[in-house]
Image 1 (cartoon, helix red, strand yellow):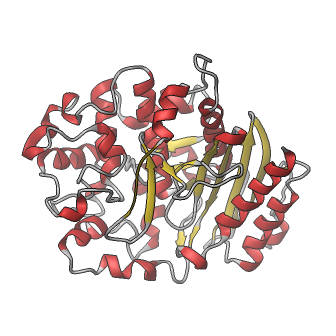
Image 2: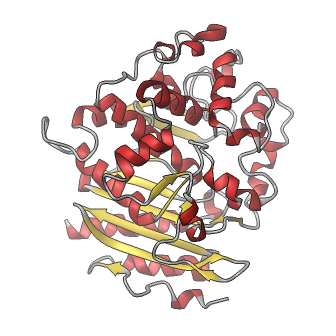
Amino acid sequence: MPDVTATLQPEGAAVEPGCEAVAEEFARNFTDRGELGAAFALYRGGRLVVDLWGGVADSRTGRPWGRDTLQIIFSGSKGIVVTALLLLVEREQLRLDDAVARYWPEFAAAGKHGITIRQVATFTAAMPALRVSVSQDDILDARAMAALLAAQEPESDPRAHGLMYGPFTSGWIIGELVRRVDGRPLDAFFRQEIARPHGLDLHFGVPDRDLARVARTEYGTEFLAQFSGFFANADPLTRRVWSNPMPFPPHEDLWSARERLQALIPAVNVAGTARDFARLYGMLAEDAMRAPGERPHLLSRPVLDDARGVHVRATDPLIDVPMSYGGGGYRLRTQPRPGPDGVSFGHDGGGGSANQAWPRVGAGVSYVMNRLIALGPDDRRASSLLSAAASALTVHD
């Protein structure tokens, strides 16, 4: 296996003056914080300010993490899903406060005629889970999962009538909405309308030609233990949300299987490089601060003002995690604060990834990695990088 510390600033890496602390924290992730393979990027004003990668992409073979290694970002995918949705809002093809059933009549079944698109995007639709038991193989068929959601009733449990996060369902509902409104499935819409026009190496389902570039995901020592209370819980609602199916099954190889990498599982399996996630969020950060009427990269100021304005802020009653979502489905900081990153929007991902827009400074940041580590004090990899990046931008200003 290669010496990871020798590959952390390979040829082509970028660290602009003033950002040296970011590179130091990136290296420290490997020496002190259990990193395996990872990348971090920071775009500001359309300029690549930091671009780092290193470590091991596949621990079985020793394949090093390269400049163009792809990594699944798990629930970070939800930020990409709502960006596609908001492009339809931008084009006035749908409105967030419309009922889902206006565009997808079958969804009105079982008392869901009043559920709005905004509620789905912000996890306030009382639809956090499938009520029909499904397998890990079943969820590879996005249209079949959408049909199940259209047929089922919303949750009657009072705990679900507020903010209740679900790992899968919002992606299937929004994906089907995109298909109903535009005519193309979500993966094709995103590729043709966002990724390809802007040269973004981001994918809902990895093409055959790119499979060899994907990092192999593995679980850290204590990663699965943090979920034991949810995955084995006897509470019916908890079991529906967190065990139907488990987002992180015991066998980590499932997330590196070809069929999983190439399926459309919108809420969880977008793959890309940190560089391109950061560039996408950098464009959105710039768009969020444009003068009214100024031509955007992707989304206009009014659309983003609504999308990133606080819509719901609450503690999820099942997992006891404080959450805050903007009106368009971007995850926000639960406690805004001064500084470049104090009003960020985007979405983090299970195991440690972070993908954010920092509108105050017109910046986008992304950290992706292939070893998933438990939340909280067990994993300081992303927080250390983001803090160093925010400090560097503060100094620059």
